[in-house]
Image (cartoon, rainbow, N blue to C red; front, side, top):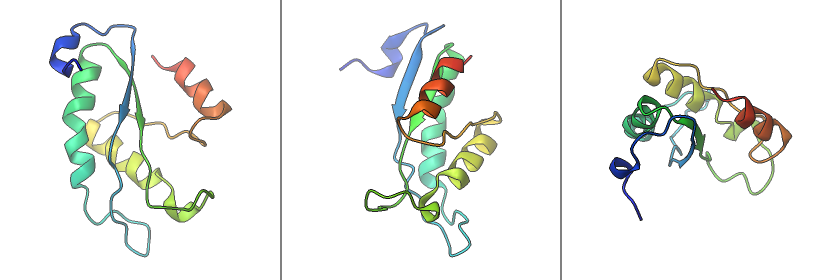
Length: 107
């Protein structure tokens, strides 16, 4: 497998990045340790700096195949946005119409 350093210019290309962003949350749904999010930032910034449109995939917890608001990636998206200094848009679903629409609209 090629390393990220060998990818070169990615202008106009879409990069799908699978990140382990399964961070601990307290009872209020607040992140208690953002280390995994911070570790993903250099890779995402590198791809963005080379012109890539970046889609990050992740999961939070183990909801047992059912949608559960307690496992929403909203706090993760918010923290990632803060660390990147750029907006992070959270899709309503993992692979449905909302995700497809957002991917097509990436700039």
